[in-house]
Length: 413
Image 1 (cartoon, rainbow, N blue to C red):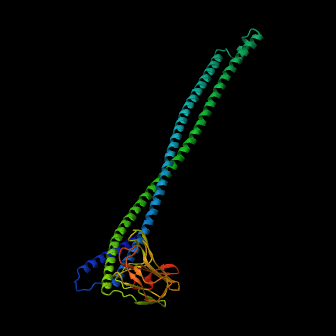
Image 2 (spheres, rainbow, N blue to C red; image 1 turned 180 degrees about the horizontal axis):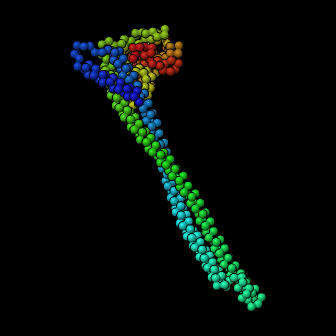
């Protein structure tokens, strides 16, 4: 990040210096000669290199910003999942809390039943003891009184059976009460176990809640951090775009300055057709006298269609009727008129894979199949076909593919 800021700082200083020297240049005395087109071209190349560096930095920053936004979306999705898990957990905890409350109430009810059964059992046991004790104290229930009080053996048996039935009834009642109390106590204990399990489940949910809460805290912190980084990237992009905009304006001004210098140089010394250069052992002749290159080889906005498209040649401006000569010797492969396009034009084949083409002539003075020498006049500069002014569109092809004529005739830059 520091490296990026350093680069931006260096670029800012560079632009400031460029603007400063431009301003200083504007107030220099008139006696100082203007910079040559080659000097201006070097300055323009440096500016374009700087622009390429800024564009590369911008692309990197935009990529980082895009990654940052993707991470933000992922974090927001993760946070949503955590929030949903917490909501679901709270709902489950509420159900468990209600179950715990119900268990507690049931346990309380069962405990009350146990207490009542035990109280009833103790009451019956106490009454049974009191009755037996009273009967013994009054002599009504002793074995001797049962035997001696009977008037006959049969009466004795009846009285003894009655005593046994009373004892058995009391015993059975006590046993039933004791059994009922034990069953109620067992039910109470089972409910207590259920309550303990529910409480354990509730404790586990509390632990999960703490984990989820920590996750949410961490996610919120990451969101804040990522948002801050995103803001930083956006600020750096905005700063770089502002610098690039200023630099692009400076490049546009420098291009105008370069073109003005070229115009001055060409106006003072127009290029004379017939001058030759040698590239890779092959001689090339300048096809005409011209004042300047009005449109170089490469992509451009077409002056008529307004479409961004490839310009497969160079446009050379000059007076109407300027003689056009063959750049190399060869055979005429075309001498014709094309409406709305090349106008009157001639194409030559030079026999080694190279070809040349000459468009927008007022008229041509050669015919199909004719052999012409290098420097021989083949037509005259005009503005026929799809042309917005007097000029020659000159192109060179190799094996059927157009190439930049400036690579073979350096003055056509």
